[in-house]
Amino acid sequence: MDINKIIEDLIDTFLKAGELSLSLREKGLKKEIKPDNTPVSNGDLEVNKFITKKISKITPDIPIISEETSDNKDNTQLKDFWLVDPIDGTYDYINDLEEFTINAGLIINNRPIAGLINAPC
Image (tube, rainbow, N blue to C red; front, top):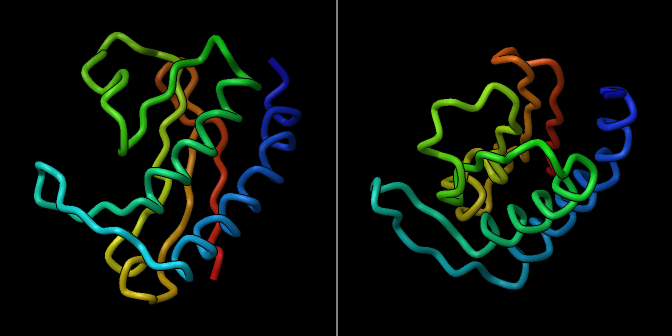
């Protein structure tokens, strides 16, 4: 597994995810409250879909755990996985503030080995 190539292949995706997040916010976000009493927006969900689709294409054998989906969240046996938070700082994101990021970390053998962070603002 060439970690540098994987990350390089995802840089453009994360830049485009940032553009997508801002575009969706400009159009007006639909906000909801999740069962854990935290906010989520259609921007969170769309960015999540955009990022996870590309990650799955590049690394199809590595499962994804995302804050915005239930897939793999209860699987405590995973040693290799992606950990994704499509919009970290949803409160700021939905309130037109600048303090939010788009994040993913690659965990191999239960250790973080690489990650991507985009602060679109």
